[in-house]
Each structure stands twice: as structure tokens, then as C-alpha cells.
Image 1: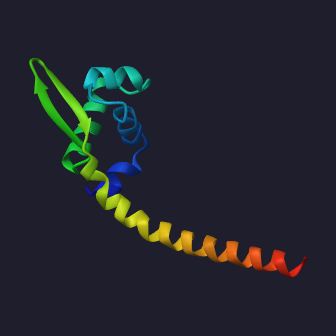
Image 2: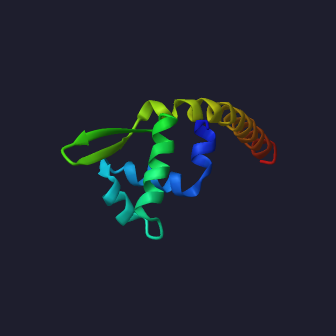
Length: 105
């Protein structure tokens, strides 16, 4: 599975969103996501770990999960192409509208 397949699943995106507030245990993540059981959350966390979006560290009897910022680089690079496309087109539209507005005065 790659990073795009991993984030295609809504529950995994919800886990990533929950981790933007900081490190959490699996139990804390289960509490923030009603409808997901502990085993389901653990499976999703394993997938997110395997694709490099989440890291885990042991803390006594618990495992603490955190986002890996560098894990999103692949997605950001893919999105950047479209960001540039729309920025260029919107800049062109803005220039056209300004020119048209000046001509109508």
C-alpha cells in the first residue's frame, strides 16, 4: 500500500487529523473517534506507520503515536503541481478581469 491508498480511507484521515493536536495513545485516539473499535484503530495505525505517516514510540506499557511531517512530502509534491496550475490560471483570470474593468471605464 502507498501513502495515497492509506489516506484514501476516511478513518485513517480522521486519525491523522486527531494527531495534528499532538501525540496520542491508541486508547486516546479510540476515544476521539466514536464508532471505531480499539482493534480497528490499531490496524489503521499500523497501515499509517507502514507508509511513513505516523511514528510510534514505547512509553512503559503504552505506545505513543505521532505524525511524521516528512510522511506527507509525497502527497504535497503531487498536490503542488495542481496548486501551480490553479495559481497560474487564477492569476491570468485576475489580470484579464483588471484589464476588462479598465476598458469599461
